[in-house]
Every structure is written in structure tokens, then in C-alpha cells.
Length: 47
Image (cartoon, rainbow, N blue to C red; front, side, top):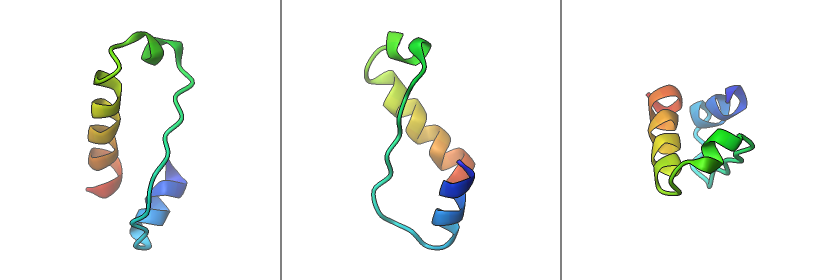
């Protein structure tokens, strides 16, 4: 996450890949996790 924050701060606007290696996340609904990931990225990296 720290690397991504530096990339965004430097003006990077390209695609971002997220790898999920957590069994609890895989067990959740397939639409719920991407929505939460996006929200957390905006909350913790962009703002």
C-alpha cells in the first residue's frame, strides 16, 4: 500500500492490480469485495 500511495502522489493514473490471498475474502459475495476494495483505496490512498 505504501508503494501505491507514492505512485498516486507522484501522479500515476494507470491501472491498479489487487491480489486477494485471504480465504475469508474469497468466501464473500463476488461483488462485495471489489466494492469494498475500491472504497478503501479511495479512503486511504486518494484522500
